[in-house]
Image 1: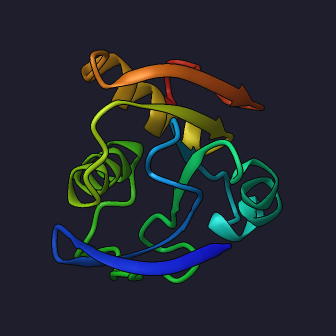
Image 2: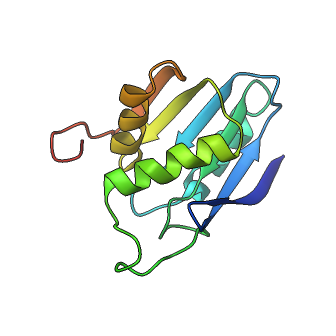
Length: 133
């Protein structure tokens, strides 16, 4: 069963989906562009018996806040800061990540700056070029 929740991060409402028991290994699912955590719903259903899954929407995507561009810098760095704050707000200590497309530059920043928190990375069509990082 997937739960639908919202948490405040840096003054923004961040919607997220959560499934599976917190006693199982945690997998943070970072969606691509132009989608949202909705793209991960079937994967979450399939993996929930053995994993704790958590998938946030980024600002401007899905059901998260959609701040005006003059109020929020839409960059990978800004999205990284929101995702980092999100992991802290929902109490994720150590976790693995699934990164897809847009989620790659965000997740790779998280892994490179906080390697003690990231156990593994699963990448699907994840970009890792200089401009993205």
